[in-house]
Image (cartoon, rainbow, N blue to C red):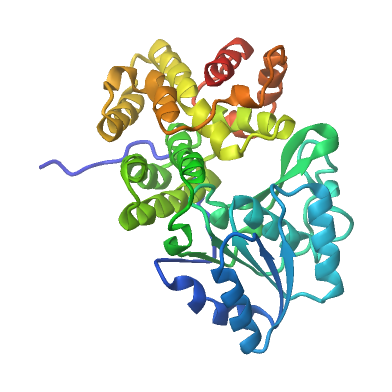
Length: 389
């Protein structure tokens, strides 16, 4: 058997969280690590997961003082500034963020902003002052309670700027959490709408890095295994609740965060950032609905450019195996599969007459789309949004 070889390996770098722990039961054990980072804890949390109360109590039993911030949705500048003010007043030493991707983003942003000066708008990309962080963020421990964003292993926090109708990033390599704890038991029994919208976000976040112009051998190896694993897990969860499938999609979400942090994303997330800033549609749902149309456009562009669409064929084959659809039409049929899962289309939020070309033009300016496999036009992106309505 010939020995596999990698030819023409371009230089690349690779970053991730300081430590990653994965597995059922890992969350409670991590409280002792939080206490070692500092005794004054800012707990950034959602309200849905009852185990968070037990974790807070355990921290207090370990001698920590715990101040809590309840996240109300995707963080805005006002949310970050309010939590930062609380953290500074309490002389917080460590941030513990437990929740979905929006909660983890709020926690990472606050960890960065407490030692910094000014308000978060001064540091945001694109819209704000884009000032660099000059002081190390506080230690941040991130525990996801949904399987989707991979925010526990990314170096940015997405922050909404309502006055501009945009979501943009606060970004710095040092914003990677010191400890990421993925306990899949937090996701057991998650409602179907959340399971599938966040789950397809996780799958998108291993597909887009796999196709990215910034892909490297490490992200390829991680993504290539994770894509079929995520698709089959979602197909199984569509049939019945399954602990093993929950573990698998939690793992895929983790890998997606690692992959996107090192290889970037693509047109799905470029469009999703703009649409999410203008409308109230959930981020994961936007990504789910755009995935099929964007894959179709990129595959057509790949065929025209090189005639070799092997990676797209692989993805189509994995979709075919998971959802029992013909591989040749797997991308075109994905939105029909989502219809069967009762996920709403984007037309529920994007009203008739909306200037879709303006959305597409703005998407072309985003950081995510700069690593898309091919340069797509406004007309092509507009057609993808139309397919998702």
